[in-house]
Length: 82
Image: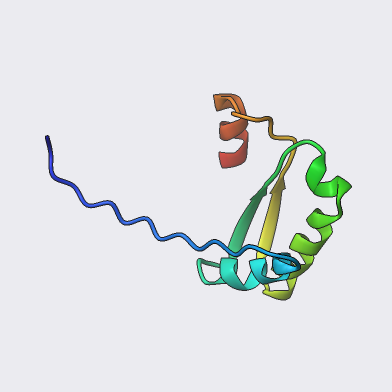
């Protein structure tokens, strides 16, 4: 077995009206954001607009990559990279 170090910091923010904190948290990581989401539910329940507003208020440049299926194939991953 080879030795290795895994560093994987994770922040989980859970609860009512916590979507407004997304921009502040994402801004700690950089100034660009790739927003990856599925086909319908994010926009159907208006969470999309709240997330976009939070990211915009934090001054982030956002690129949408929507319509992603569960367990996306390599093609959808490559589209996101592009």
